[in-house]
Length: 339
Ligand code: NAD
Ligand code: WQD
Image (cartoon, rainbow, N blue to C red):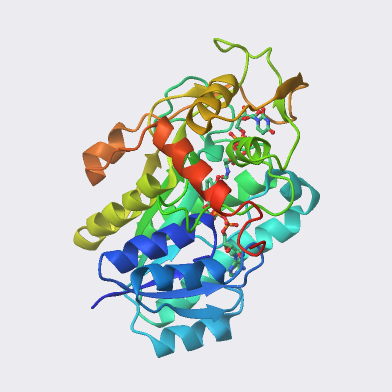
């Protein structure tokens, strides 16, 4: 049986990937330092699948810890989710973001190479497109970043692309996520933000469940149909299925690929509020405030390359994204450790 190492496997997207990989017959080894997560989702996944997850609390920057993990398991591929992702925090701690996101990836690649593991799927972000010249955004669009988080993602992309162009042993899939939302349909695992959520859907969910009084809409004077920001929300289960498809392709064809994972459909903040009210049956009070620094008006993917190369396209619609977010939120009103 093949073995996948999942870095950041206790986090939001990584935990969903772990579940899907186990269901598809993979052995899974997780390395996570729990800097933005906890062990609980892994325990729940074990209960849901009746399978065990080998897990290590370790920092991917710690090469000797990583080397022990690679020595203990015959790893075939690495799904690399570990990293920090808070845009605001990255502007306060830029060096920490480079150390963790870039330094962590370099340490991981070095240990992989020493153990003859050359396949890696990397979590990148539509943030590398910055404020796009036009939408939908395809993979040829210019990259530009406006904060250290985005810059750290782009730096890793550039490093991987360059390495693959010189050392043909490597196979990389760089996946540029648009806005991942939703949860596994069981409601057992989902997104568990620390403190007050930065992202729209977790914030709306906490308003609907009564934890937060109202949503603040960050500006209604954008050049969009209703003036609020438009984004390409993608169900986390669709997203992780795209990773499995990417793995199939790089396993058969060495080299590298850079692919958008989005639906190609944009929704505004107010459309998200209305859709959430409809699906949950709860009011989502909001008030319009000023724009958030660094935000852009509109961002959605051209998802055709993923269809062509991976045979993948998103299948779950907005109501599924919201239904699953709402189920997770209701079952876990205070997140993993609040119950
Ligand atoms: P998350 O914070 O829930 O998960 C990341 C996990 O990595 C956490 O469990 C954290 O504890 C762990 N981690 C961080 N640094 C580590 C280190 N040095 N060593 C070991 N573990 C470490 O975030 P997520 O939403 O699941 O995102 C996963 C990846 O996808 C990240 O790389 C993120 O930048 C990227 N991404 C996320 C989004 C999004 O909106 N969620 C969008 C685009 C890209
Ligand atoms: C969505 C829309 C806000 C909160 C961020 C990162 C990006 C990527 C995904 C990792 C925008 C509006 C939000 C609120 C609001 N992450 N909003 N009130 O900004 O598209 O992307 O997460 O790679 O790098 O920047 O997502 O969910 O924060 O915002 O009105 O309380 O909701 O202005 O239009 P964003 P988001």
